Length: 484
Image (cartoon, rainbow, N blue to C red; front, side, top):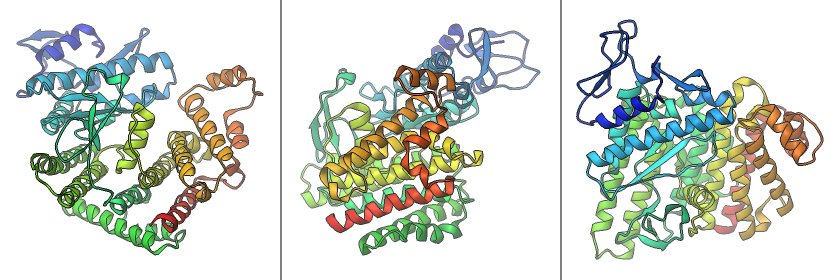
């Protein structure tokens, strides 16, 4: 049995990888042992063409399927660490090989997501050939694995970002002291809009909530008005009501466009292709913005707003991507990278709304287990982010928050503990951590019930989703009354 983490095997993959051929797209049948002939790997397994997906990952004399989610469910930190190294090595080696093929010396490839063992792998590509490079990666990965990188490795490839290492005209430039990326340019560019796209970004945050609700109601377009009414009942401010309706219209147009082109928005391969198509348009706008040196502030703002909207729409088709600049700045940049990014109260509101949308998405994905505690554990990463964002908003406007500073810190600490010591961990690990901290011996569900006051009124996932919608849009309503 040939294992994907066999070093000789990997060495030959990257030695011979060629974007202009069908290298390793299929394996021909010749004999029952592995052989390297004509710089191509040939395997025979019952006379059928096979892909890497049908091979195994070997660890401590055991064989595992080469799939991130089943391996994550085993709850072995050692296995996760070793498979994570293989996953990262495979993806980065493939991207770096493509970078050589495209002769893009100035392209920068950075891991932008969480460093937790059980997290997905988010890779951002920066540079003039970022889009074709991402497109080539998706094509190569499909040929190698007969599947997408999202399904196999829980890996998401992004060809652009709301901010990136570069120096280009008409973009707002900031200097970062980034210890983790010493090799890269410390001057970062931000899309300049002079704050004239506040409502546009609020609408994209609301669209994440609509997307999460829609994706788990049988994806029936006729349900959209009902979904909107579920949100609007918590709102009194006319401008927020209007933004909800505009968000609904934008969302409906994207869905109609997908259905009209017979696109299944649940098909990740198709969504990858849509993402590349949309981000290519954003790159054209970026080129126009960066090459015109005599732009007036109004023209820069118009192009900047157009670019940010195109990037938000592109991310709509990406897997597990944030739609708003606020979420990207605060979660990826400030919390994830430690970057000292400028961030406004409006961008923090976008982050707050969008991460509540992510909670709803996770709640629906776990709902089939019919266990509210497992749903809360599943969504703990985004809950933790919501309360960290709320804490920042609370500093700006403490009167808006339904929670005191003490309450918010309790929520942050509770969800952080759930995320780090319960989600993806064995019950034994949880018990050991409690003992280490001097807590009494209780099971994980009792811990959640004792530490989350909301559990007094929450009995199931539907109750929790109603709570999230109420919490999100009542706060947004108060925010609009103060700042819009």
